[in-house]
Image (cartoon, rainbow over all chains, first blue to last red; front, side):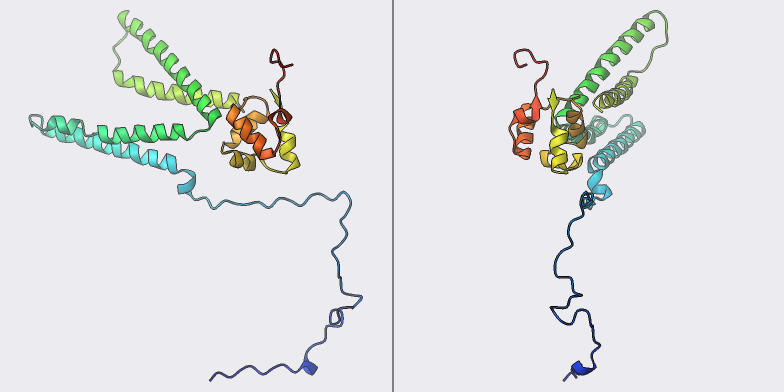
Length: 176
Length: 69
């Protein structure tokens, strides 16, 4: 059986002279009158509970998929170089296609999630990238015919990506 | 196109981000529409009208469009 705390003796309770009686003239019974020309109450800043995963989910997924692609790519190259005569080397060489397809799927999904103006910006950036890549590669092709050294075809995709990023930056600024 | 988006938004004391969230677009898009740099699609204009409980003509004004002004 627990011992209950002794009830305080009301005679010994401290006296609050201002608020003991409901009709006390010292007690405020209504809200303060609004001040003329007062500034409006500041809006409550709602800080969303956003973690890195919530904010950058697409980017993290894209980065992980690219990492998986590079790992499988390097792995398949190493395996095929170590077994140049194996009959299964064709199957190993095409293995990186799977993570690459996943990267493309993530990319298309990110594009479809954009709103209408962002889609428009991306469309213009893609157009800029496609056109300028075509001009640069065509131009260099003619220069190669005139005697400049032959460049590897793998330079085309990085060039396209850089020009796409440049175009996206330019067209984003245009709508700012 | 001119629009009264900024005024209507200020009347309700919504931030660009709040309006963007209600409309399901990015804050940059709301800003570009307010500054007249981007004209929204018809579905987005209708959802703006519904958000502000007004008609589209009360929000957007077609200036410089032949046959309308």
